[in-house]
Length: 76
Image (tube, rainbow, N blue to C red):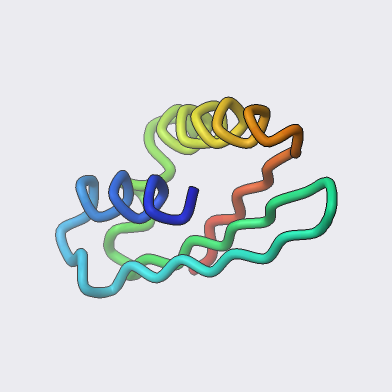
């Protein structure tokens, strides 16, 4: 899942070198924190949050294969 988020975020932003993804897992939940450059924050979130919502949907589908729930936090 970390590779999925990293690939999507790096494809969207102008500065892919500023993309960092950290992941923490519990028995039931996978928590992912995505950090991008300040100028690229809007590109990752998208208009009315559509891009972020799509990323969360993909993560949810990926996590459900492992019987887990996912959470994506986009940080400044």
